[in-house]
Length: 229
Image (cartoon, rainbow, N blue to C red; front, side, top):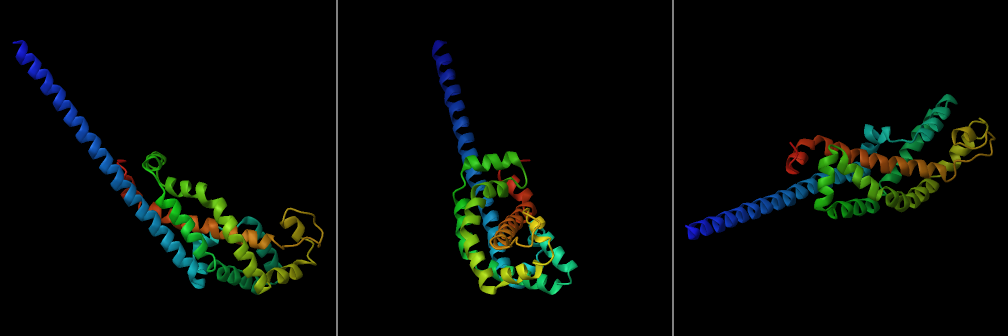
């Protein structure tokens, strides 16, 4: 009798061990597959953003990028339009779109590296955070680096076009530029440095908006892959 009890105990222990091991392997496999799918979707969003940034007309027509324009730049453009300089606003936007194409080779590897370095722990956080959490995580880890990397390129290109000087000249007599930029109201205020900063912010935030849009469109696929019902 004792022999049978010992055998049953061993069988139960062995069986429990097998079930636990099987469940752990399944969870590990699901986590690995889910992380792979998540990365593929994020890399797809980055690729789409790069494609849009590489084409001036696509950049100008994209509503997500337009919505990402900083409020101060919107205010500057609104003032120019009130002064009857809508053509100058159009030229400024065109130059920013051209400058954007020079940033993609810098921004793309930064973003792709961040995605490729996502861990199972990151995937778990994203699963808990829900739709948009993946893009938010990328933004937290790369936004500062992206701004530092692309701002010099944007500034160089906009100065090459001469748009900063043109805008300063156009707004010099309005006595509004200082208040628009948060400085004094004197006409000595200048967009130098400010325009490239605003444009860089628009590019970075616009890029994340495109990535998040891709994430949102694939939300059910991502959450399903990460085991969220």
